[in-house]
Length: 66
Picture 1 (cartoon, rainbow, N blue to C red):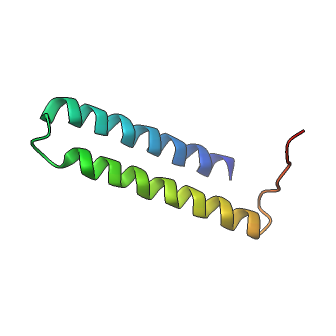
Picture 2 (picture 1 turned 135 degrees about the vertical axis):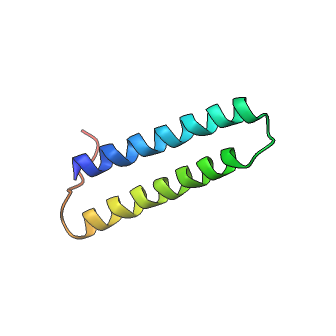
């Protein structure tokens, strides 16, 4: 489970970085920035749902604040 979460975080960060590169390179003339940010939103929602399902099925346990 930790590996899946780490991969999802990497994909989110990579998507944000590529959106920044596209924004600087294209100067708003193409929609690659929008696509990269849309993928980031999709990865974030997927990660959130993955964590909810993992908690529901007992794959992860909440520890609370210590």
